[in-house]
Length: 300
Image (spheres, rainbow, N blue to C red):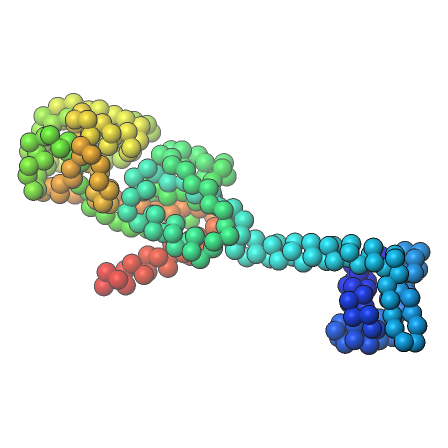
């Protein structure tokens, strides 16, 4: 029994007329009749009662009609879903990002991607750069959003944004009363830096600013991620240097201030493996490019 024979049979079973079924199938009637006869011979059962006036399904034909409908519906569904996943319109995409990226542009990028590909399941997780690097190499994730970027010749990358740095200050600090702070005046202040590992990392970027501005921190509190650093700032442990986008989210106990002094800024970069040509990955990178172009056009 061939699948096409089931389609032929179902057309005749629903039309109860060989001529109309042949027209529906866009084929001549004699070949259709031969296919139905071959199917009956293969099954060892008569499927239709034929007479000059009408055609009726036999009991065997009634049974096959129900099975044929279910089989054809399942195959059609499999074809549709397979094509959708193959084109990147469905399936699963694993995206990991540094914690500070949860502020600013990344949530809007994710929203754009969800809007364009609503049937793709997104698995989102936060990691530091070292974890992103390892997870992308070992294929545990498909997309890595790092700050500022991951150094690996096996990765392709799309720049998402560049932004200036700001100070995150405990709201009970005298610095919080100032509209703008001179970085050079921060000697003796306790600094909360992240991540603790790996080094060099973002913490070393902040230390390089301190060195250039001649600032000697009173104490260095190293924590593993951005969220932990902001939590420590909120309880007065010290101040931190954070991406400007972080200031868009209010955190009790924390105020954000621009500063005067060396500001190298930072970036967010979207990465994927060069050999990962999955359509979901290709579509995410293309969405990123469109998102960045639209932002640049808006800024212009």
